[in-house]
Structures are given as C-alpha cells and as structure tokens.
Image 1 (cartoon, helix red, strand yellow):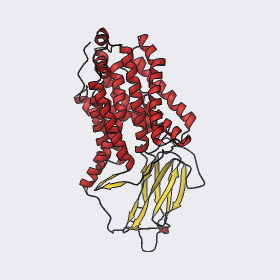
Image 2 (cartoon, one colour):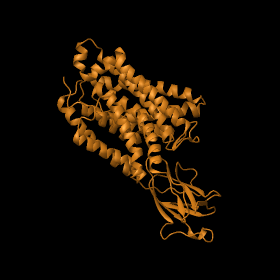
Image 3 (tube, one colour):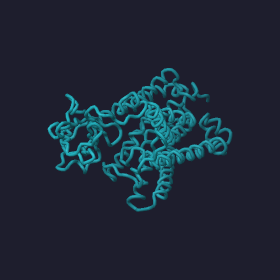
Image 4 (cartoon, helix red, strand yellow):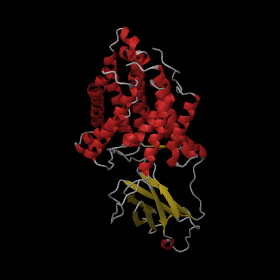
Length: 434
C-alpha cells in the first residue's frame, strides 16, 4: 500500500528514536554480568583479552597478568615474546593487572600503570598492552594512521552498503522498515559456515549457495508473511512491529541451532599485506573487489534494465506504476529476493571483517545499516550507498580521536545531527507525491 505523506514525514524521527532505543539495548547487553568460571586460562571462551608486555622495546617473558571482572578471575604469564591472552566468558568491563613482583630486576612500572581497565566493543577481542620504561617505541605518523584507517573504513563502508541498499530497496517499494533484515545478514554467514566448515565444500561454492539460499529466504518471507499482510491493508507501524517480532524469533532460532559460540570461516586470520602504510589482508582485498563489482551490478540493474526501472517507478509511486501496467507485486517480490541476497553476501563479508560467525552478528550491524539508510535518504538505493560510505569512514577515522569502543556511537551522533538539519537525508526528498 502507498505510504501517506504524514507517515513519511514522521518516519525519520521515529527511526531516530528507535536507533537510540536499540543503542541502549546493546549497551545493557554489553554490560550484563555473569558467574561463569574456568580452571584453565579461558581457552574455551569466545571472548579474549590479549596483549604484550615490553620494557624499552624488549619483550618481557614470565610476567604475571591477571584479569578480573563480571564475577570472573583468571591469570596467566607472558611467553618469551612478551605476549599473553586470557579468555573471558562474556563481554563487559574487566580490570587487567600486571604483577610488579614478577618483573625482572631493574624493570619498574610507573605508579598506577600496572592496572588497566579494559572494555569490549562490538568485536570479540580486546587488546591491552603494557609498554614499560622510557625506551623508544615504533610510532606511526598521523598521516599513515589516517590513510590506513581510511582504507579500512572504505572496506567497511562497502560491505555495509550491500546490506543497506537491500534494506533501502525494500523500504522504497513497500514502506516497511524491516528490522528482520539483521537476521538476513546473519543467515548468509551461517549458511556459509554450514556448507564450508560442517559439510566441507570449497569456500567459494559455500558462499554461492549461501547467497542463493538468502535470496530464497527473502522470497519465502514475502510469500508467507509480507504479501498476505499487504493485501489485508495492514498499516506501516503494525508491519514494523511484525518485523521486530520476526527478528527476535529468527535470532533465537539461530542461537538454538548454532549455539552462542563464535566460529571462524575458512581463510580468516591471514597475514596482512603491506602497501606502504596501508595494511590489508588478502581477504580484505577480495572483499573490497567483490563489493565494488556487486554494487556496480546493482547500479546497472536499477538504471539499465526494465525490472530496475520498474523498481524505481514502484518506489516513486506504486499507484501510478500499477496504473501504467507494472506488476507491482512481482516487482516487490524481486526486490525482496535481491535485498535478501545482498544481505546474505554482506553477512559473509562481515564475518571476515569482524572476524567470526555468531548467532547475533547481524543485530550488531543493524544499527549502522539503519544509520546508513537514513543518512543517505529513505528509499533511495544510491543514497544508501553514500550513507554507508560516510558511516564506514567515520567509524574507522573517529578512532584517531575517540576511544575505539565509542566509534559506533560517534556514527549515530552524526546521524542525529544530519536528521536535525536535513530530515529527509542526503539524497532523500522532503515528501513523496502520490
């Protein structure tokens, strides 16, 4: 059904409120406490705090390190290279303590420098390093850091665009803000894990199958849920609430079948390649290449093909498109399949970028996907691309000034500011006609 002008004017504000609510939910989940313990140094856990101990640039072995927090305590010692790692049962805040008495003779720690507070962000690994003494350390110039993070931000923005464009196309043709899009992202990564790791297929074949199954999932959801609801004339707000319920149902269904652990896809953790100050893994290069090719393909589809032109017509005015002889239901079905396939591919690339596959990985990305779509302009595919690149670059570049754990919050602050100044987004229109 055609969204009303009033709904279109208030949807950006409603989404901004939902963003803040989701952010609060993520924060509460991050800081939730647990009582799990382990006799070993947490090797069975999915979350890891790791780092180095050096004095004047020299690694220090056999230095005792202890981690405590959230009802959990563990300790270990550094290896000959000064490295250490301790697994923890959950994300949250931990206190990392270096035992001064275990340091070699002549090695001292400044007062209070032997205790560091560590807090996880959206990744499953937190680095805590102890650089002691006043010796020289290898430093990286601000320009080199900027260039490296700019490229990483571009990589992140491209994979974010794959998910955001699919979500934007669905909104443009149906008016639905689909919160279950997060589970479509997760579905692609989980299917790749099943076919590559559990069934032993080549990773490229597993990815192709996962994308095909993601498209089939989009087709099935539209046929079983969204098309019948559209024909009943259900309003946009109830449809959005249905999408939230579907998101919760699918997410915990994933947890039931796949568990709460994080698994790695084949090829993750490869050694980075150096291009001057830029450090990228081979998978990063492949990911960027695939993203660019697919995005160019989507642009060609929308601008040059009959179905693409029909999609843009339905997005502009479904009633006029229907009167012009366009099969609106068929176009919406194609959009659901395409959007779900793009989300599945984005999930695969996100699994390598994080890295790891988990039952709630799509939900961790959902906030940024909505931010990109709203920033670029609701219902505009090219606006979603621009918004994704901006969000990806800001997330990575903001760590030059902000703590790394706050980089996602900073992107949402920018979103709110843009909505206050230009509610329709960068490429959106003030209102729809029809």
